[in-house]
Length: 331
Ligand SMILES: Nc1ncnc2c1ncn2[C@@H]1O[C@H](COP(=O)(O)OP(=O)(O)OP(=O)(O)O)[C@@H](O)[C@H]1O
Ligand SMILES: [Mg+2]
Image (cartoon, rainbow, N blue to C red):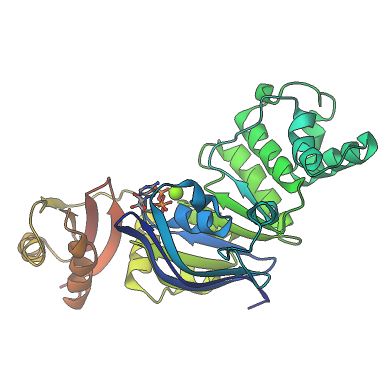
């Protein structure tokens, strides 16, 4: 692994009594793309927010542990938060252009940091728009309102705006989830180029995107890091069964199942027993979808089914309480 840029050590985060991240320790390498994957609510955004201290904006949040960036602890009282946020640019899920012109959106950050000279600003705006892959589309209308751009163009403008303050690290929280496929491809292409000069951490729900972009992968599951490693190893041969289930489940999309059993309201091991009974009625190779709402069942039912020799095809969160586990009968 190349040189470490962000070192996370024993990070725990609580929203009041609810623990969102549990004992996370991981090294994020310099000038590589690290993808954070995992089901909804597993703590992906929380992890990004800790890195750039946006977590401070949430009431009732507490944390322990360290995040070292260039050997400076971002949580240390002496650390300058403005400086941290300058170092870590954030590309959010939806583009958030400022209500001003295309030019002014990109010039905004450098102006705040004291750049006044027009020629320097012009040069900077051009450079950042080129790097974000937007220059050719906007060079003749730099003074038009940013709001007139398409959503995909607005997202590239936000990327340019972030680059203008010369960050070292780009954090992306599902940066393409609001974009059409062509705009998403544009952003992905820029990120692949940007990793030559920047460390990139991207949260994505899209396994295909993670496969296309990531050098390293972190899989979070209910606040724990259950897998971390080089992307090719994680995708081809995940060590953790939950990672395998998550990757397979996402890649298999919503495969048709032969039977469905709703075990909501039942706790472990009863949901497992009911699932086994339902599986008994199926033939080898047929599939069963099990709906559970007991958090223990989310890990224990797949584990038990694998121990019985069946194949876990997917484990997916459907809403705040419900999960669907799909099993293929093997014996
Ligand atoms: N401001 C908050 N106050 C209380 N709880 C929160 C807050 N933000 C997040 N949480 C809780 O912390 C956990 C992790 O949330 P987080 O937003 O980090 O998840 P995520 O993996 O980014 O999910 P998603 O894929 O849906 O964006 C969840 O259980 C969530 O409900
Ligand atoms: Mg999130």
